[in-house]
Length: 145
Image (cartoon, rainbow, N blue to C red; front, side):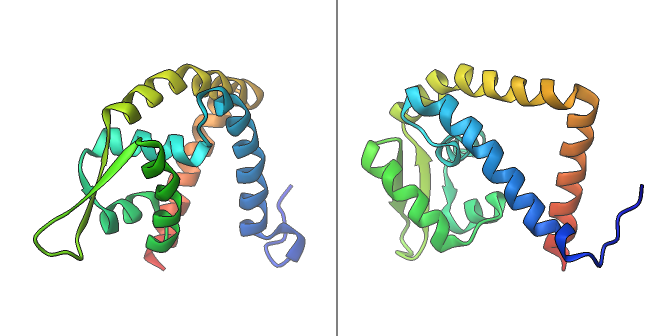
């Protein structure tokens, strides 16, 4: 049945936030033994994939405000999971995953995988795959607006 896009109770943002909070709770609980939050895990995965990356570029990759990213990185710096370097231009900060961060990521991956697979199982693989495609499409389109 088609839904009415003018119905305020069907706000896309509201439903995405609720889903995000619910999934984050599942992942946070799974990652607790590794002493990582889901946001930190995602950041470590991205840094491991991207390598050394300027803070502003990392913010774009993660679709985050730079100030929010800076706040999220602070506890990771304190734990020694990431480091920052400045280039000749002191305004350019490069973020890198440390060896300790790579070890934390490696330890957390099986915990994350278990949470991920439980979510995929609830949705069924095809529905989950379509959801990922739809979310990627929505992110790309929203960034064009």
